[in-house]
Length: 226
Image 1 (cartoon, rainbow, N blue to C red):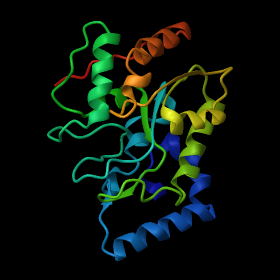
Image 2: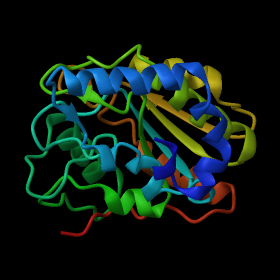
Image 3: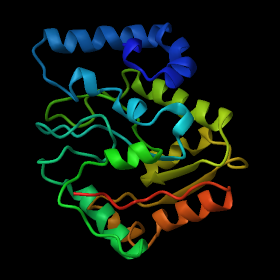
Image 4: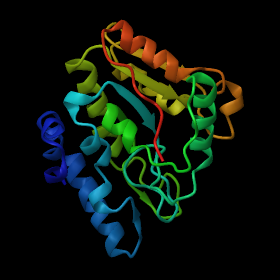
């Protein structure tokens, strides 16, 4: 699995691939396929979060929990779907908040967030695969240990990052982050179940840019072109 990783990420995460939990995870994924289950995202897309946002380019982290489990949705970036796929409810709410938070932001007609990833926004799910139509089916199989290492390495080796932690699951990852070196912005999750209990009005995107500017960094251009 490691061969598909961007060189900067491979340098910091390569030791993980040699550990038993990753060998067990690989064996589990092989078993799933042999049992006839469809796995999302497709193999080449599993590490897209790392490959679209090289380690040296990461400025912001938006942490998701699980890939989308519907046909054609997941492509390796948290909250993102490819053009032509219906925009999921959580992402619709993210766009809604952007419209009130970032002056002039216009909601695009698609949900592909690769522009953010290329701007330095790491769109990382805690679990990188899922069985088709079964939410959470690959949780607790090893991915969380791997992605925790990614968060820890970012915290240790970089400074002035912004971590957007939406919902309790993401907020539990704050123990991995050195808040003396980085900015952590917490709010409710943008899903329809919780968006009205603290996500709407939380202004995470303007707060992110203010923190980046205060660190002498370039703000993120949140506008996504059609």
